[in-house]
Image (tube, rainbow, N blue to C red; front, side, top):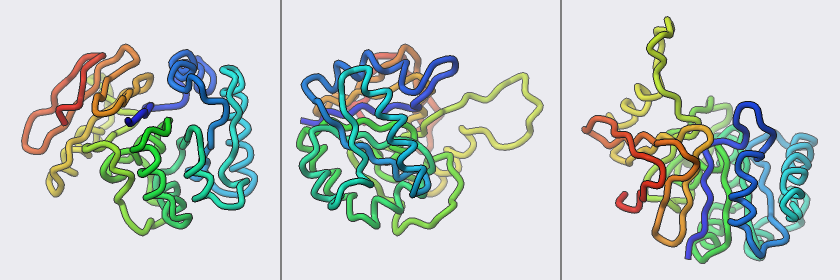
Length: 234
């Protein structure tokens, strides 16, 4: 049974890291005392340690210990044994590159498909989809493939922003970029606004967080869906 928490962001305006989601995460990770944290979306070295400490401080508030995957001897084995997994945000190109380099794509998909609780935020949410092609990040590194975990049958656009009718900015909107993606790909894309998350329980995929989400399908106008929508029809 899948048990996945797919958050658009780790931090909403005016609140601390994961603060807005901690009550829901406490319930989501009920019975779990230790979570394996993957900081690969940030540069290595000291950045991994700083990022892991930040996650540790947040999870300590709900009584859960965080272990950084960069500190274990065998990352693949650690994923296989983990009681829970958290992949944080940052640059999706960097994250996917590191997941491939450490041979973690298949093992993460396997254990999460079998029920290991998984939390993703931002880039860590994007990789739950079919591919990372709907990330907002700059391609600072070239991953071996754009294919990701495929835990969902669609893609996630995290931090989805609506066009601002009062703005004088004449550049691309997020909707423009997603529509361009659909010139060449048919994968559905769900625009997930900040403060929202998808709760995946087996085959049920429920929108949470109090906000609506915007669904883009190839050849069709984008459609708005309210909070508590079940997206399992995708």
